[in-house]
Length: 291
Image 1: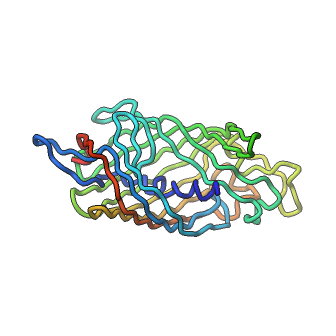
Image 2: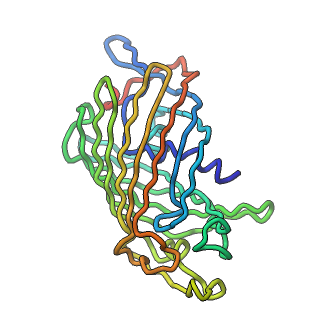
Image 3: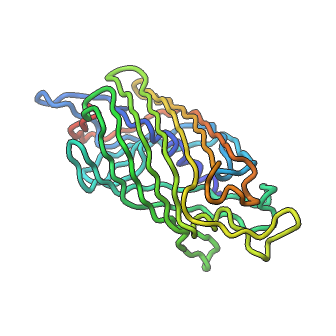
């Protein structure tokens, strides 16, 4: 059940490279306006590895909520859930969120006999530095620098608890093509870095779980590989469609010799379609990229 709930958020996270206008626009006294919130429901096909470096791939179709909220500080859209802390022509500072889906170790040969990987929430500040393109331009290029605390969520009734799984840092180059009409396109390439605690949780093998084919292993902090994501989306009145493809590598990472790393390269992909059936009567001024 937890995995299904976590995967339901996958379309939002995965398509985050594309941040573009999706709402039906109106005009009040010459100013473009959009609904403050929109609500819909859709279906999403996905295929993804258990973790970067895993050789087990999960695929399926899940329902997912389509939710778009344009608050003064809190935003919820295809870029994820975030809080705007500071904004200028060239620099933005946000409180950003992300997450990791749980992994059933019994279904992963490399981890069989080890504890499951719990779902995790990532939260922390993200700086966005614009290289070229104003927020109103069709083509934009920026650098994204999120630093997030990883919080593992262990669910077990009265014994449920939350614990730190370390910190992660990503430096990503992000390109967005968002025409007034037509298909929106985004591409993002980034490098991963994380603390020893985070890498040990994912790739470490304690002595009690060591076997003849899986020796004990202590991971180190530092470089964690790279990732490239491309995504497209388009809004047709009440219908939204979107897709993404992602490739990643752990080749050269500080943990690439872990016995839990079975593949140096992974891919994930997804396609979703949603019907927007409700929107607020209250309208707000469109953001710069929605003008």
